[in-house]
Image (cartoon, rainbow, N blue to C red; front, top):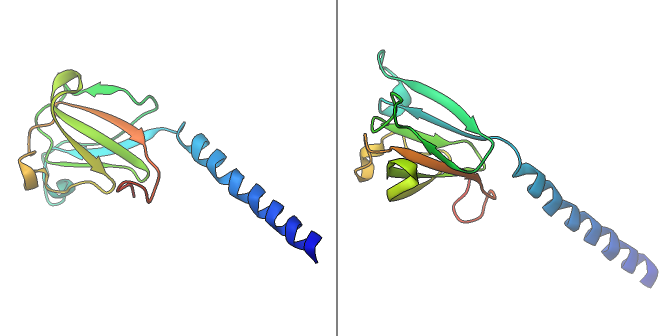
Length: 131
């Protein structure tokens, strides 16, 4: 009976150890985000820009020279991704951290038509606001 109990604990420990390895591998995937130049994800609007894009490198993405520079009205990272958006190029200036599903109305806190760069990274679902 005692050997069975120890074997069960050892097996459970092995299962628990496999979970963090999966999370580490997950961090190597593409980091997706969706943005539109119209509020409410562009629903009901015919003229705005929409883009679902990815970056595989958690680094600064500048929007300078694109139709999205200081024109974003909806922004949301994919599930398991968090993005920090900035009101200046090169990920400088004031910042706002956004988790999935994001915001259909960026004007909720004065961020409508303000984003000029962003930096996204993987986050752990259920931890620190990550969904």
